Length: 340
Ligand SMILES: [Zn+2]
Image (cartoon, rainbow, N blue to C red; front, side, top):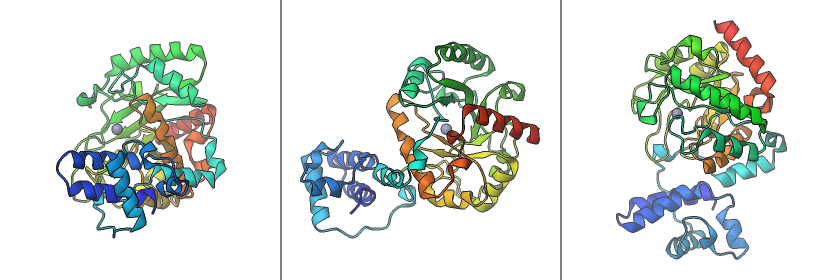
């Protein structure tokens, strides 16, 4: 039994409790998505399961019982379907060494919007992970709840990026996660956006609509100011299953417009998921991978995104993060010239 199944069994067990046990099980279920080693391998080595984060003696005994006598896995709710575990990702990457040479993290937040760390500490942490460059992508003004930036604040952030880039540990790209209205409109001056190295755009509202949203996506993709469509499905583990659309049509439109689709690595997002990545791959569209980290520890989500790309068989030649900063700059310049 792999961690993916254990995650779900723990979540289902959590739904059967209401007290502190429900909380402990829910915590363990979320945590299991990130355990880098399969629990069955730990057991095979006679190691105690309590070495795993969020596993106390009671949860450990429960898991041991399941391993000895696997219970049937009930219906998996839509909000928990299609997530891979870190152990899945590690295994996929072990079998595919070409995916290890990732040069950048292309979605990172700082205290300029809703991140927990100042730009300087985030830059150091990114350099520590061996990247050649990375994109700082704080939120734009429309997302008030996340402390989104207006044009003036963005310009001040650029001054700080210029300063940080003097240090030279790695190059920080000036970027932004722009909020798109349900009509696909951005919330920043296009002349300012044109000065950015990379513009991410996505929806952050009306994410629980159940009717088909294809038109909304097509409108957003027709917006010439965005280079990357971030966390396209907009799902959240155990909370919402994301928007519905005619994905082959949406992905083909993105390929046609030259827009990259994001693989958001945040454990609770994993967006696009592997199943949709396979469909997207066949359209020839570009991909951009970002941890969407709001804290230093979240930079470690990267293997979930690269692992998903490997599982979907996406060539590194189609992923922006595997290109040099110069090739990426060339890619955005050509994309914008074509759509402008
Ligand atoms: Zn976002």
